[in-house]
Length: 288
Length: 286
Image (tube, rainbow over all chains, first blue to last red; front, side, top):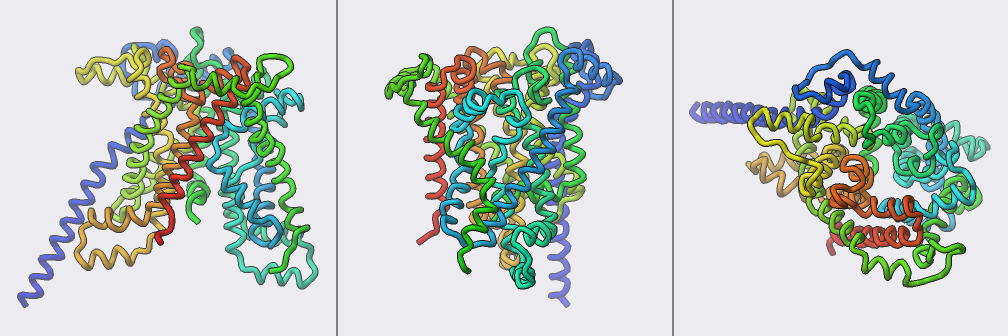
């Protein structure tokens, strides 16, 4: 009897301590989340305000109605819609090619034994921590001067095709698949490239989705390389075109913010819809 | 498994081709260029020309100092914050988990240019929302971009905002790979949650924390866009100039490829040193 009442007392004190911890958790995390959302919220607010409103002493935290005016202002300052067109085309092409290349390489590393495998793996692991700065200058000299490809799509798409985390991710995905499946196809006499295309790739669909999202985002947001190699107006990607306006004296900041929103909000929507793939793609870099 | 050299290399060929042309050769070439005087036509071999200049260049040491200062402050703050975010997001007590995940992870998809523009506007002296909010609670406004210390603070705040959630995603995946029964056993033994965090979570998470730290250090070491766009080309007066920005100025404004390559290899040397420290920290105990 007494033991039962003691145990019920301890369980009620445990549940009240759970409640206390839950309240503390939310009291800490809610302000932190609001601070974290604040810059994104302000980006949206600024994009809806006329320049007069942005540069006024009052505090404005709610949306106004000038978004379309701001888009017009932006388009007057730089051909942003054209730049968006380049960015979308480049990102789509890059994503397709890069997914193909990295999954082919990942497949080879996961499924075949071959001479020099250790070297290839060492290269991939070694380049993860190598600063991009080391290749930047010769890459620029080669693409711009030797190949004469500055201000072309090829310059934007081809050099970034090498990426190491994607290959590791696909190697991991393919090596987790049961080998019997591929052996069965081999017994039937199916060629290796057909096994890869028609058996392995369809099985890897969720991983390919994760990889594609990460690669698309990387291309969409890429700044330094496109800034250097495609600096001619008319060949610029959207982030580069927007970057040229920051720091100018006679420029519409409402327009710049509208551009920032056009770059960011579609990605946020994709993020919300495909959060699981996003998170899987980013986490895969570290967790083996 | 039998050797299938031809098949394997057929699958690897496009990838290795891109690697050889756009990475392998540039890595070697960058090293060679750093030993050449590149402002004369044709370039000539001059082994001490760039490296000699580097060790006596106050602009290089200024950029190195700024970069290391940002590293030493920003990376530990961000990693700590990311661990806190990951652990709290993983709590079974959390309600509206999706909203919190969105708040912390959303910056991951925001491009450098877009967020640089927003931070620049938010920290504007006269019309920035941060100074308006400081004023409204009776604090003096801060001239963020005319003085070095607040300008550095803005850079660090911006980078932390952009990347803390990214690291939290990786750490959260690591947390979720820790078997639950370890915690259940600890709870049965009446080990407090705080002790569980320090004696179970942190040690098991260590390799992932080190991985995040190394990636963050190497990323921050190359910091370019934020000082380029937020503090206006490393301003005030070079006070926020980083190695990445110096490399850009030397390589692509002054077209001094040799000197820029020497700066790039200095960064690579630092990265290699940091990777070795990582290997040492995460070595298997004998």
